[in-house]
Amino acid sequence: MKVFGSTLSVFIAWLALFLMILSPQLFSEGMFMDGIYYATIARNMAEGIGTFWDPTFTQTLGKHFYDHPPLAFGFQSLFFTVFGDHFWVERLYSFLCYVLTALLMLYTWTLIAPKTILKWGVISLFLWISIPKVIWGAPNNLLENTSMIFVLLSVILQIKHLKKSSFTKLFIAGVLLFAGFLTKGFTALFPLSFPFFYALINRSWKGIVLQYLAILIGLLTPLLLLWLFSSEGIKALENYLNIQVLASLKGVQSVDSRFYILRRFFEEILVILLLCVLVWSLVKYWKKKRPSFHRTYFWPLILCGLSGVLPIMISLKQSTFYIIPTFSLFCLAASLFLAPRLQVLFAEIHLKSKAKKAFGIMSSVLLLLAFGLNYHNFGQLKRDKDKLSDIKKIIAELPSESIVQCGIELQREWSYYAYFYRYGKISLSKEEQNYLIKAKGDKSETEEFKHYKLGLKSLDLYSKNPK
Image 1 (cartoon, rainbow, N blue to C red):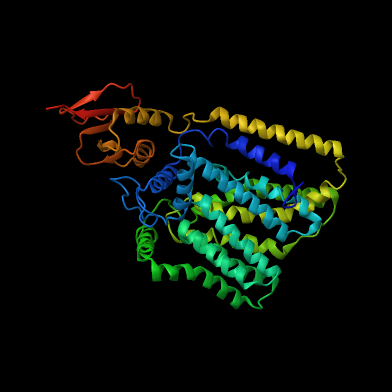
Image 2: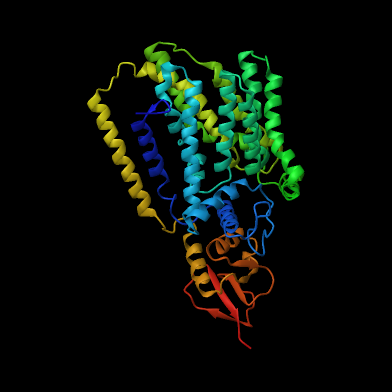
């Protein structure tokens, strides 16, 4: 049985390996701060706290959350609507985004690979999970986990147009880019470069103006519809541009060098680069052969991927996870380079039916083992273990949906704002309230408050003495 050119047993083996690697974090508690923010907003949206165009984070911070466009929150809110408010809902959503992306990568492979190397498509998935930031992003509920789906779908439709002209496909490719923009903003628009780089590499400029016209119409039509029928949607996008985009260009800084993102990109794909050099060397100097190299899509994919990396250098606000959606394109390109060479290296190996059956059984056993490992870690406190333990104890003592004053040392510890509202709908405030939490060791006066003795490790809880 085949899965987009690859045998089902090999895909199952990949899925088992992926789940094993993720098992310590995927369904354990504790998450990267941004992921907790996004899960909280999506949960709130599902429960009617905030709306699609006017999301809410907490009652004191981000009551009108315009830092990002809302589409990923909207999709994830559907999961909360279906499954309820559980810590694992955002993790399930995040993981399924990766599985869908993997299937789209295999489908893309069937479009770009010659029949002679079609069976090697699953290589791209193994390369993909060799990238540390890909593994890190899967359990951390990033917006990029949603936007990479739209990015890859847009590229797929552009490739399908190149094989059989269809301006409808290009129009939909543009709509998908708008969906990517509505998920992560301008960083999701880099597939606009694909037609240009394809024409440049293959010297095929005929009809490129019409191609771009169709894509841009697809990209701008939803925006026009918003402008005509949803003033709230336009206002939300204007707020996003002012709060996030313009601010990052005006001087918001998270790195010391504009070249940070480029350095991190090469560090992330280092294993892939080394593997390509190793396989190339073995074929050239051991087998002494020069297999055919299919450049038609190799360079367009590479250059399109780079167009999702290099523009980030414009701003000093950079994070490596911004470029997660580009990695699927680089892995597909690397597979085009590796597959013919691996075919040469393993040309003399022919598995018998019994060996194939044994491999299939082994893959299924590994998948069951992977499920077991994730079950073993399910619900355990991993990341921020002491912090989460204290937060849960405090939430149990507070009235529902309280607003709590936080001490000076905690006022810029944004993860506390996220965890408290995600787990207990508790909003933190700098203003005086009936309840107060402080960091251990905070010596500020609390004369009018009584101390709760809860055995906390990193926090202290106080309430005002009754008059």
